[in-house]
Length: 104
Image 1 (cartoon, rainbow, N blue to C red):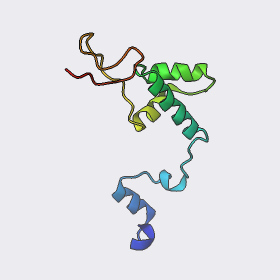
Image 2 (image 1 turned 45 degrees about the vertical axis):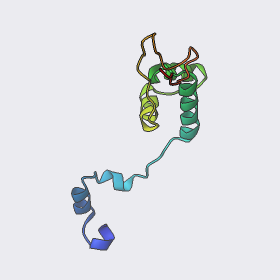
Image 3 (image 1 turned 30 degrees about the vertical axis):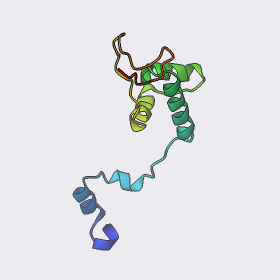
């Protein structure tokens, strides 16, 4: 926008509501972000009732040096959720954690 409209960087950032420092810094992602995401999704699929805190503990046991906040950020980005607890009668999943819909 700055080159097309021939206005200053300060004005463009003010209009967009963006900090000027974000224009100078190149966003850098971690090298292991994809592998960590795959492990988080695999653990969430295996342990359906575990949340991101317990998944973080499992990742640490597996050898990852990972922060709880980073796991939570990836958890939210991937759209993972722990299903609500169901009553014992008419429950929707088996004992292994897999979710199935029982017909009435």
